[in-house]
Length: 525
Image (tube, rainbow, N blue to C red; front, side, top):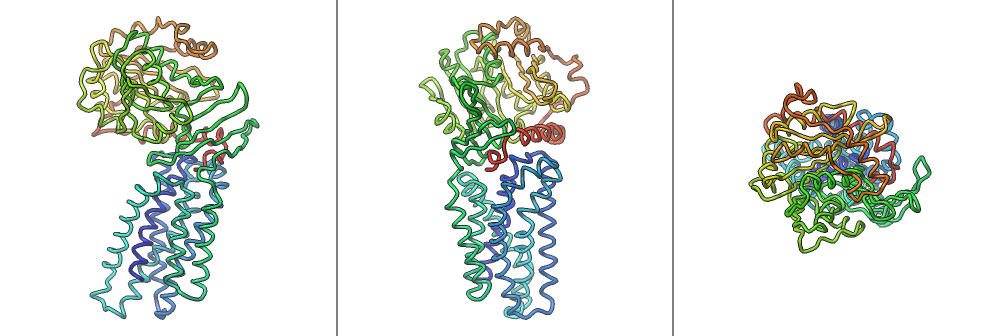
């Protein structure tokens, strides 16, 4: 039983680290600085547990060691039950206080107690087994080996069984219940049995009492607008939420991925975000009658549906099958016979394709921006190879007016591959530094000259949206290697890709805005 305990608690330790990071992502993001805080707290707690577990063993009787050995998972289970009640009301204020400092404190809140207690079991087991089996059989190396093998199993369980199917809340409760049951079985009697059973019952009650995804619950933001969660889709690529915001004709329906808006529809069922209208209008202006279209990133299905309606054959590449489920269930996306859905990583899918597509749309966001491996010279070279003669690439990207380096690096990379890039900054108020950038590149760079002549009125966008698009079009710049926008900017490659460091300030700016805008209960998984 003692060795089985060390394996299971080793699994719980790694499960908790992965799940805690997913719980924290909507509030603190995924920037390099945030992950530094999470990993630092994790390693510090493990080190403290190993140290104080060893100190506790000195001069203790076998009976005391055994009681402590099973008391640790019992206390860990109870703490995790408490953490499930605490973190929904604590993460928002901590993120508002400071993203980096708040991430440290949030990690301590969720992880410190269980990680210290569970890592202390390793030296406790060494001390328990030494009198029975001797030094050769009960060495620290063997104990840490089986504990680490349990951690490997924990990673697999978290990645393939918990995160894709359960909310972070329910995942933590499963771990709490498992630890409590383990303590009750190992302790068998006395306080350990009572604490273990108490933790098990509490985890079961909280798990059953909370409806999956908290569908239908309404909260209000600072402007007193109602926010209603219609559905939640846990996945390996973040928690997708469908949310209605506001009431009546001014309401929105949004698709959020860990707090990042994938798309939004107005009360009339039209896309309410400018990027879909602008990318479609710009692409059709440059290629009026596309026959084959490749869409990298499904979102809510707006772009692929629009081009299938235009008579094109459409291939959609989406890594997350649950994004399709959300688009189908709540945004009316119904792909017809002219659309092919491919569930794969865009980088893998474009590798090796050649000269087929008249249009390629790139709308790939994860966490707080585009994934690093989808912004390199090698990736865009593959995209270039996908284009037919006269083909065009349309890209949706973030732009932070205060931290321009990530965008300059992306422009420099596109210029290296395509020779020329059309850059449009979405019009935005000065108080909002984060906006979208619309980028166009072409197999024939000279074709981009025609973008300035785009007739926004012919795009079919609602009047208010068309006015915003006209304002954005005024910012059009044609960027080549001699442009000041890319002067001194490095090209992103698979071998030299500093994007994580370059983008960290912009990602934190975006996350601060998300935390300030979206009510905490909507961000909580």
